Length: 142
Image (cartoon, rainbow, N blue to C red; front, side):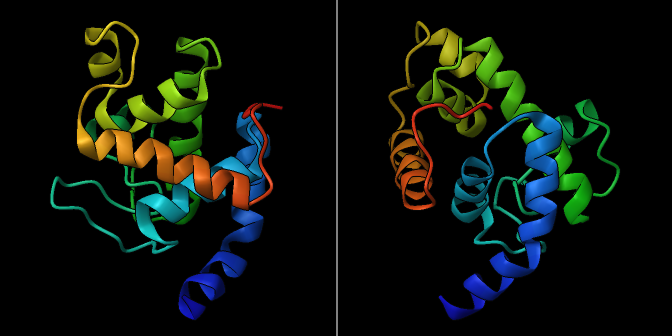
C-alpha cells in the first residue's frame, strides 16, 4: 500500500492535468487508475491492456496514444475515452465505468445497463468506492 501511495503522489500532477484537459474530476481519474493499475505505469493485463489506465491497443490508436506505457499519453487517452463514454451514456457514471471495463458495445447490447458480467459489476462498485474515498461526488464531469 505504501508503494502505491508513493506512486499516486508522484503521478498527482499528471492526473490533475489530464483531468483538467478532459474536464473530469481528478478524483475520478484517481479512482480509475487505482482500480486499473494501482498507479503502475508498467501494468499489463492478461487481455493486453497496458499502463495506468489499462488501454487496449484499439483504444490507444483511437485516441492517438503511441506509447501506452508513457504516463502522459496513457492518462490523456484514458481520460478522453472516459469523457466520451460519459457523453455517450448521458453522464451516467455507472454506465460509463461499465463501458470502460467491458466496452461500450457491451453496455449498449445489454439495453444501456451494466452488463451481467461479475468482473464488470465488481469493477463499477470498486471504482465508485475509490471515487468516493478520493472525495468524489455523483458528478464526474466539471
